Image 1: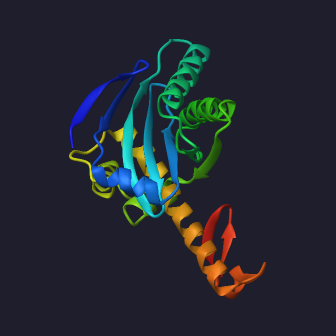
Image 2 (image 1 turned 135 degrees about the vertical axis):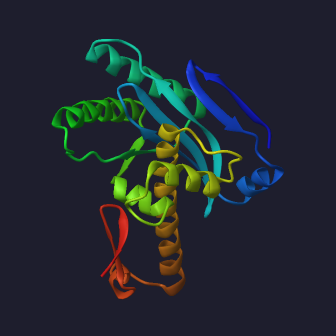
Image 3 (image 1 turned 90 degrees about the vertical axis):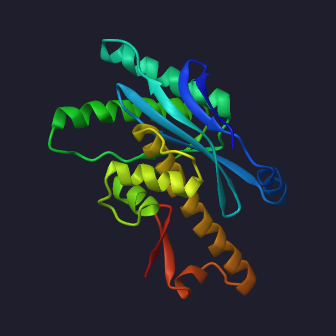
Length: 219
């Protein structure tokens, strides 16, 4: 596929050409476009993928370079950047990573403010927001929750068939989108199984799984 880089509404991004198989796939299944966001007060990563049934197709990814010196200016720049990405790619759902307190409370506070600004930008455009922990994102992409950033970048490239590893912030955003895509696929498969077996309201328990916080867990 051809690779091209550039600016989308002032946001640095890279997108890859689609194959003819993609067009055929979209005809056979409903396409859901997911936007993953990795918020930060200097750089905010974004990743866009299409989910067609159980297949994932890369659309674009990149970094929003947050401008301004004072915190309010930076938060405004972040919100504007997220809105530019939404206007460019028209996602149906969005995904954010949950934030937990780390060793540096000040860094945690600033990251929380960036995350709040990103979430506000998403809900202001009427997007549903799905949240996952860093452990869940890494486990979905790499297979374990203690994966390093380089491992996440490598596996994101493999899962989406990219010719090169995406930038670190963009890779984290794509990982968020991939995690939600996999979760949606699980829920879709479960719904299909219930329809086939004629399970009623309490069918989930009979199958040994249930839904907790939007994810499938074993009983």
